[in-house]
Amino acid sequence: MGLREFETLKLEQITDEVLLVLLNRPEVSNAFNTQMAKDLVECFENLSLNSEGNRAIVLSGAGDKAFCAGGDLKERKSMSDEDWGLQHLIFERMIRAVMDCPIPIIAAVNGAAYAGGCELAAATDFIYASDSSRFAQTEARIGIIPGAGGTQNLARAMGERRAKEIILSAKPFSAQQAKDWRLVNEIYPQNEVLSAALEMAQIIANNAPIAVRQAKQAIHKGMQMSVSDGLSFEIEAYNRTVPTEDRREGVLAFNEKRQPVFKGQ
Image (cartoon, rainbow, N blue to C red; front, side, top):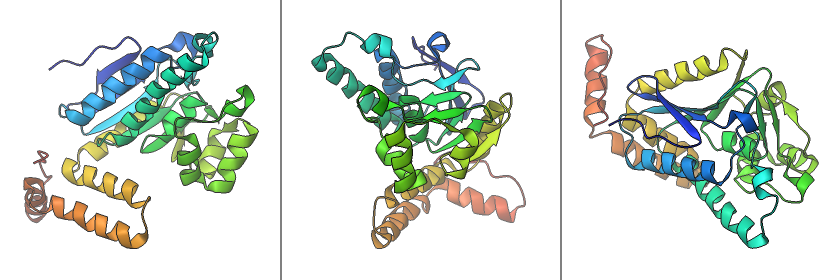
């Protein structure tokens, strides 16, 4: 099956197991309008239902100027309160589609990640950023607050006090600050960040896909629970890996001193 085509996204199959998803509106710094939100919903909801063999995803922005500048305010300029609310329902579904996708997602932030763009990056599993990247939650400057997970995902990554400073001040911060504050995992030169993210995606894709997905779920869901409940959830996730062919193949390959061939079964 060929890759789906989208008006505002560009999909590229890097290897059989690694998919690159590019936000593709470089003329407006990849700001997301209603169509991009719809495209992201369709893209990630479809991948949740049918991975089509993909075991890791890299999300980045087209061009070398921006990852995503947030919501397209030109489109929103003349919206009524009702239209604004209806559009935001799509944005809410978009961020949930990204966060709920069982396939690991790495954000390769290659430029500005402002407002909803910062929230979109924070909704992925982890972030690699270029050294020239800038981040910001600028919503308070236009009379709203982050509404695509920013108040939740930033606080969980950075801690409550740092998230309050960033969101209440709306001040931009650098890639190095983002790394120091635990939002970003690693920083690379501009021309290396995408390849670094794709390399890590392939490393993840080489591991047993059922185990990877169960581990992702156990970590994310466990963070919302008490330690006791998290341990119980972890064992449920662990037990789902025991009867798999991949578990048997992994142990056999170790004993035969060869690379395992995982089939996701």
